[in-house]
Length: 261
Ligand SMILES: [Zn+2]
Ligand SMILES: [Zn+2]
Image 1 (cartoon, rainbow, N blue to C red):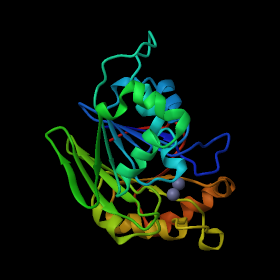
Image 2 (cartoon, rainbow, N blue to C red):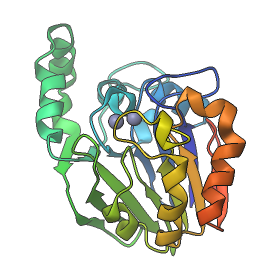
Image 3 (spheres, helix red, strand yellow):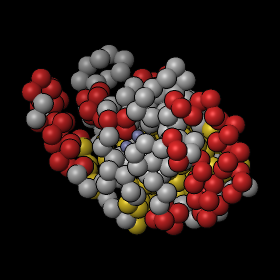
């Protein structure tokens, strides 16, 4: 399984880190997790074909995780070479409760955009599933599981494929459900928004707490993502703090970083 971090930053982009998005490449599928601003551009730069992307997993509806959702729906309608409207492949989207209403709002309730949506007949090639807990997809090629986490009614995801697994927290405070979902996972990609509790803003996780979480899951490797700009001068401190409680491999995500498990 190959995983590429497309964006390792937060709501505040920097020259080093942009918005949340991760692509997981299994033997048969490319599965996108979150789709923050500029995700489509970053996918193209990384060699992926937008019109061949058929699975999207959304953790929650904050703009840094979903802003390229409508651009994905629209762009799937076009042939990337000729720019002509093409026969559409189904786009299957999983997300937390509210996915159907959110999608309908985007497709129908924004005036300058809804005419395009109508012309492209977007709802004809969308399969939407609101998921909350447990396995939501079980096929030979990959198994998808989810659990609710404490952040804007969001959810986390785990993908199992080829006897390997990757778990992605989305945005969350330290969460027992996430620990259960990520048990013995090969790769845990967990948000690490702030270095410590003194600098914490909002419902996020700090380096002070993340080591214990990783240790409890028993994950083989931990990847830190969703770093706010304040983290940039404190990377060494962050890794040192986490390694006090967790003795597995710790990687600080970077945009475009590829990981093989
Ligand atoms: Zn976020
Ligand atoms: Zn958020």
